[in-house]
Image (cartoon, rainbow, N blue to C red):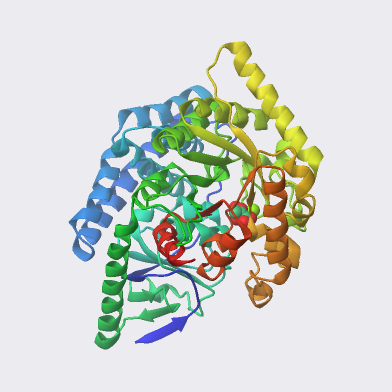
Length: 538
Ligand code: PEP
Ligand code: MG
């Protein structure tokens, strides 16, 4: 048995087989093809090759993991026969002389968006299958290395994972994530916590292909990976997993109870989500609302902007699922580590200090208004609140509000139903914290983004693993800013919450209560534990 250690970003125990993730380089040529008939034949050949690969994967998964996981692959094989999908690809090839890989990519993304927006949970759950199939086909067509294919029960090991990589991976196949790089506060780590998948970053783990398929165990409590664990280790980890399950079961008793301290102080416990696929966890963990819906994940891992209808369907679904509880949807916070090529953002030396979030939205009002229209329309279906990220100055907030008013006016003029969401801001720059008094006069609420507030206040890049010894999330400067923010909010009569990762830190809960915060928004899996803690505090 060999063992390697790293930093835990999501606790828990997992057993599985190592699957080394290597990002396939899919060079998709979008120029027209001189030979559409050749493209059509190549496409049909690729479908046959993909079917052969999936048949082999089905057998392997059934043998090594189990019938249930193998079913996922069988469903994908059936989808390879879907006439709508095949027909649309061939239409693009025939009518637009699209190259086969490009036609598959475009069709796959369109189908993915359509399925994601469906209400029926079974159909909705087919979206990752579509993404997987079109990825497999494009990889075959572009000659990319297709050796990376996930089996069920995988421990995914990678050099690093971007938020787009993580979103693009079929999470049903994953039992744990292990990366050699990555920081504990990165968006990938945040996603892993939302998904509640045991994860370790900065692992001193070799990534040789000879490890592919090897049995391993991940101890996400202690940040240790065991290769081919011995019997004693396996027993110890299985006992720990049993204790984790017991602890989780005991938290069930907290469902439905109010989040109130022993002295009667109430605080709202909301959930952070990355998309509607997290709603199930939000409801299962009895969240009192959604305090941060990171809408930018809807824009990642695709080749074009999501349109108004697609966004509206997603936001409406979140609003309706929460049945009158508040759903705070943050407007697009793209840039820095969250990149999508189709935005055409120039490479920057300091992307965290660069063209991101409201800076892009203010600069591209047409694109921003598409999102705002979708948000206002969704607000007719529940208690939606809209939150602007990365505000540093009062004029930015005023400009965002003016664009929101324009979107609202357009809808009214067109007779489209809409609601009136609260318009608040993330306080995540030192400038916003220091000007909280002025901003509170214009904002309906504040939600403190401690991840960025810490990065910008301490001048420590949250993506840089080397700087973690300097990333003191409870630095006195941060605590002072947190006090100032809530005081300014309450003086102006607005509510204030915290949605950065610090909100879930149990060492801070008593301080947040005594500062007077109204809301804490955390990963769904942290809600019940935090409720338990608050109910024991005076
Ligand atoms: C934050 O900065 O604290 C935050 C919640 O937003 P994100 O982590 O998405 O930047
Ligand atoms: Mg932030």
